[in-house]
Length: 506
Image (cartoon, rainbow, N blue to C red; front, side, top):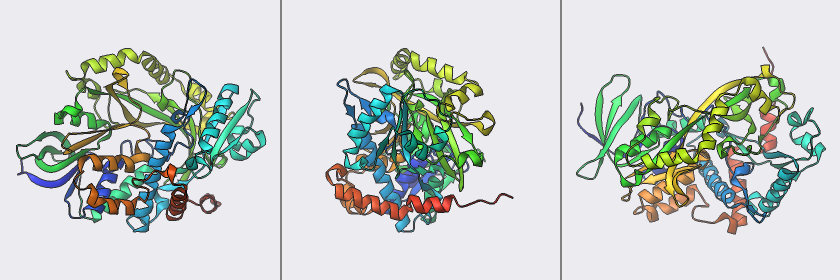
């Protein structure tokens, strides 16, 4: 066992969150020593991987679960506003990285793609109209279009409208300025940049334990997965960004803020189509409504994807269950996460979420043909031979005690940090990656308050809307839109002409 080696910052996990925090800190304090530990061989292989998530740049343009109907019939858009502003921050930071040559080609990770909501039936069409009216009056969503005209819908979504039976009213909203984001590629680009700037990135290194030392540092026990050797590393600040694996390390830290918190793993599956004749007929991310009784993470959607310069279609998600907290995790992850301090919390969650358990069992038991029937609600003439099932990433939904009672299942992203700001952990799931910049700025504000005033000018250089309400500054919204479209190459017309140029098959 080697002597202790010190760092200013240690990042655990080489996903999009650690990549974002590391990049922000390297811009703010270039001389800080940063070390990253990742148990896998490369970056972005768990939830950040392009095949382990839907790649939606979550801006609340199409996700119906981010807008809820109140008892008086009005539509609450507050969550949609928050998520949209968070995504705007991500776009600004990515634009800064491109403009300053930290990232050379934005086409490597982002593409323009319309975001749409699609509903059927009088009740859901009425809701979509109310949602459209509420959102389109807001300067963040003023580019949204609504249509219940069949010819217009055939123009927007020809693949979905072909052979569709006349079973009542249908409608859709559309925002042309949506995006498809390859978060796996973005993660790897950021870590490549960090490596070029003297960040010590240790792949195949698993953090097994961490504890506070008498001199106020954090000491980590790290195992080299390849050789089996163990070393000690210390740091003034530790960020636990290991996806589902973060909960166990948070518990091992012993900080009181990590008590009474549990996690419930949910795996996802998607149907994927690579048939170029089918793929060419759809150009959008189209979100529907979750079925009654289904959890928010089950909202069905049909997505165009750009991965490795290839266009494909993805439909899902179908929920599954595994006790693992990571795809590369252990089947003992769930049971070993139950401690004395969170036992009641976990039991309460189990009692409250019997419908969720039933739903997951039903999803796991679905045959391919049953999944195809769900797909045919989006593509009426979908053929089974054109689609294959792929297993996506593991998500660990946070369970904690809230004002709503013990054992409340949380659907979102949570930052847990110690009172002194020396350690922080990220838990939860969607919209996660899309809001990474805002979430990591929250970590910086919580954990480095003594530096915030000095860092603020640089933060504003990277993210012009930092500390400003976009709602109260429509001119800034337009300025940011123009900035990001230009920097990230998000002109729909230019991209479509390039991306859909004829391909000659061998």
